[in-house]
Image (cartoon, rainbow, N blue to C red; front, side, top):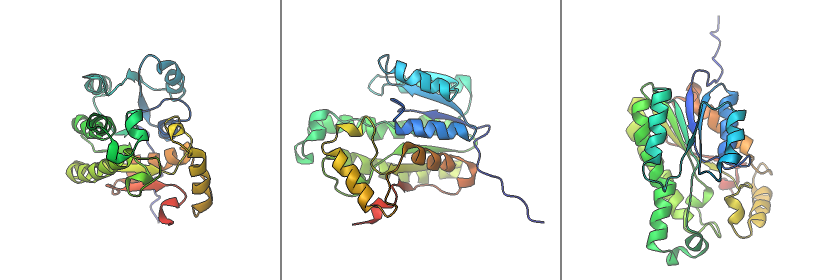
Length: 260
């Protein structure tokens, strides 16, 4: 008799989702998918201005915790993990979906970016993921999964992506090092790299509609990715079915990244 396979599930798992801004956010697509597989969630919001947009979404996924998280505020990240430890005493997965660069630096050439702007982009978009891994490690006594969000511009030059390209490249490299260091504790680490999709952050890129049209025309799947596509793939990687997959940059882009 063939032993039946256990279908992927997040029942009994608890996870932190950061970076939801509205119902178009990639992080929101992931939160819905995590919850649909049975996970209990904690959700963060940037500040009081953002809270009215995030709070109803947190309620929709029945989040146990709704916490402020502005990475520019000293100690706020540590406060989030203190709340997780007090409420749950453990953590099974987390999603880092936060990136920032000052507008003047982001819209100019990499050659011209300021030192302060580059360091701030690295701090918020990359180092904070490393810091989250450090804080999550003692809570992941039974193993777990860490996810960050990258983009094709980390490995290829994408017009108008500018300074975020080197920053995301550093994030992908950090992912591999974290996966190697945390692997013996059963903690997997992945960078998720969606194809271009319409989010609030992406809307600030010049000629973004042209980028979307080009991606749809060139991708082997001839389709644009959705936040639901990203969420479901990420949620699968959070399950025990993916326990031996780690250190990957997972492209969810209809194959766009393989086409010249």
